[in-house]
Image (cartoon, rainbow, N blue to C red; front, side):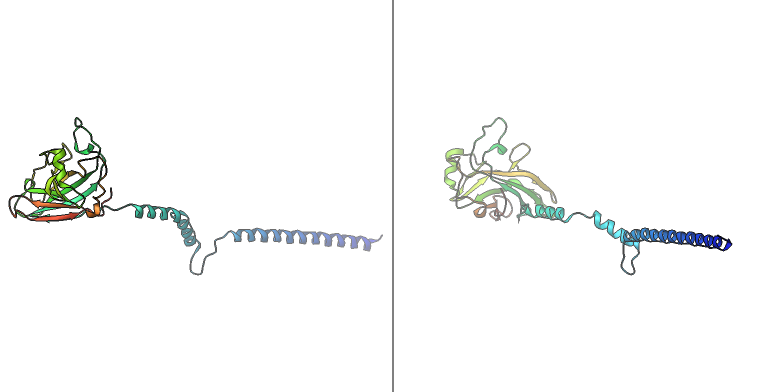
Length: 249
């Protein structure tokens, strides 16, 4: 073969080499395009006017928020709790508030450790007393604390308690009186309350059924009132009533 043949072979080899290089370049461009495409799919798409930093901040905030289920449960628990009323009434410079009214089945909370615990049906009323006056003391010894309910048989108390009226003494057909006691030492409360002072941690303890330890079905919170009566001193004979309806046991 002459020079012309060799020249054609060199030309063909050069063309093949160029073709191979072209194909490699196309392949690399194709790979680069694929990589770029994958990266672009992981980029956060943002609406017009919002940059990617704002979008990332919004996403993080949404992820860290409290789950809806937890919030709903907390709300349900809060609303399921019963609320205790704070019924009160003013009488001759004293504001008497019923903090709580419970119905224990023994007299344990009203006796000393050496006294006999007796089962029964009782009513325990915790009070807070505030002197609303401007220049006079409120003498608690001048007040009588009475309980009235159609289910109370007042004439049966002397049979069990005799002349002691700590837990109930006859006043009227369905009315008994009781002593105001201190939770600290169970002694009768006869304080003189200063203007602006509040006396707390005091209570009344009534036996609702002095003849038996069975529940007194005739007495309910709904039909029972605490009556505070001015038994002596200024404005003798005046009284106020505080309903016990709505207080949970």
